[in-house]
Length: 276
Image (cartoon, rainbow, N blue to C red; front, side, top):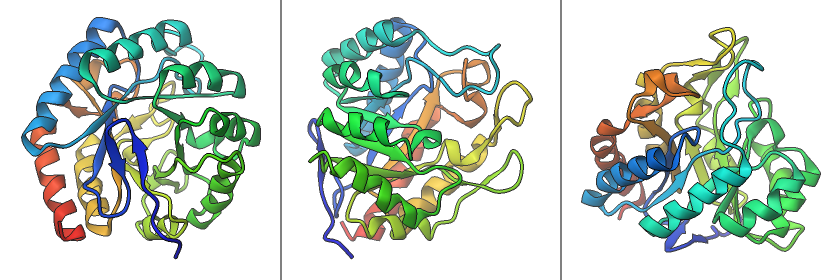
């Protein structure tokens, strides 16, 4: 196994025996006021345990199930909002990028660029993201074996950028269903790069509602606890004040008023696993 690497994002050290970091926020940017409200509630939820968080939200949901569903505010408006959240709350920010041309402008603003699972083997996208020098959180494709993520990481690292995190978000299991193979977490960790577990999208039911994806949010805390018990460097958990009326991925998101209790539990599992 390669020596564990530490990825530094703002004031957050991710990897090794460091306490779990949290990547969290609403799935889709809705407005500045909404993002500000969510960041404030997340900060309040993290404060009792001293958990450090990266605020995430997408300016464009480019892989929606249907042309009729909302994609988001667009890159210019979205990056402006995210920049303001970072300045106001002092937290790092993360958003998705979907093609190579988006990487440079997004990298000028965001601390972390995220590669969506469907795009994790797109070489030009991975190289453009790596060339920004920003931390890269690349999600394992639902169709990909965990050991194949070493090739994905190698593409990014070929740019000289070692600030790489590998994220599991479930594996396709028949139609409209995902399953989590927890063997994949230590397998990906053999690369040395920090491993992130996406509890939100691991309980997604892709396309399960016809024009939108379904999900079983009640199982997100269950899988998050299991991931901490296995050992991960960070958790990806989307949250919203009213998930049932969120524009994207509502069935998978945790109500924000439940986050403080969940974070306390997850930190306890993390501390037990790491002996910290």
